[in-house]
Image (cartoon, rainbow, N blue to C red; front, side, top):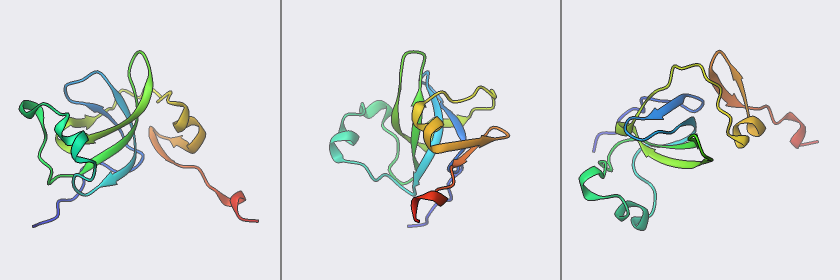
Length: 110
């Protein structure tokens, strides 16, 4: 099986193609790597292919923030420039030019 390259990277801001949420990517799986229960909860008509990158997002919509797991086929770049308000993003990441990166953890090991 040929491994596909991920279209998006950690720190990229994306939005869902069909549902009203957006977020910042904090991890990438080269292909589906969640539970069968999670997989089977997705209606067959909209269930994505397993053999594509899946992204872990600090996600948000108008009502709340949460962690989402989304297939590449369902994400598009969010170039709105609107900052992500998710509290974990503020606590764990810095932003520069609309791209997020993990904060330096220099003080963890003294």
